[in-house]
Image (cartoon, rainbow, N blue to C red; front, side, top):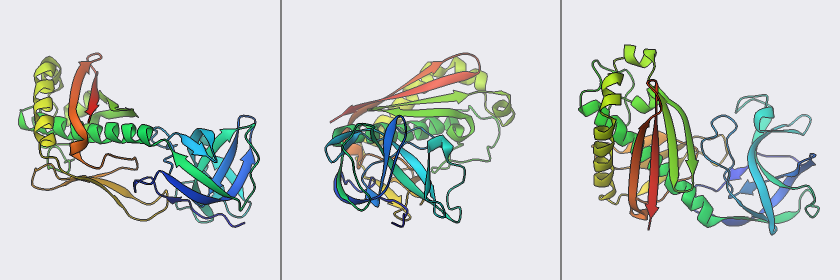
Length: 288
């Protein structure tokens, strides 16, 4: 059977569907199942900030969901860090790989199966991920408008503020109703114009102002939309939300997201100095 790029439905509030099996292979740890379409969001092998969805395939619990790439000439499947090519490489297709326990009931290629996402879990990740975007936009704005940059920064965020997040972010990890971002305040960033010593000294005041900004944005109750430039896993997706800053925020992002600011009772940001070179931003969600 010819393997085609997985049609993704995880940005369309689709939590259950039927799909046709295109590939099955087994390792010592699990069984890999590739279908023609899926409602599951896999963890990225490049930027694993957003965990894989949980759920079931024909009632069997998925133990993982990853990105895979199939070499069409051989039919060989490579999963996660084993993928040897970049997306859109000729002769390859990228797919979502559903991982089942090795003792799961046998399946066959061309069989139609039922895929069902754990909706509550996916939505908790979606709220955490959108909250992380809102928090870093607020942090960018506070630092930009309160004298923490001594010269113009080349990178601007969607609202025109100096993009501290883009310059300094080292890692970002989404968990249910949370997002943890780590930032490095190194020599390069100081050369670009960030007053990092002042930032560290005034971290409590910055945290207060960030939370005030987030609260003001949440009061707008605006819609959150993910614009998909195609159905394939490798097609671009953009998080969009109008936060009343003149231009809507548009951020490239492959994760799943909340549908509205109205889903939140509160988003609370906590800033912490790890050492003189690193800070963390923990974003906590209280959902309705």
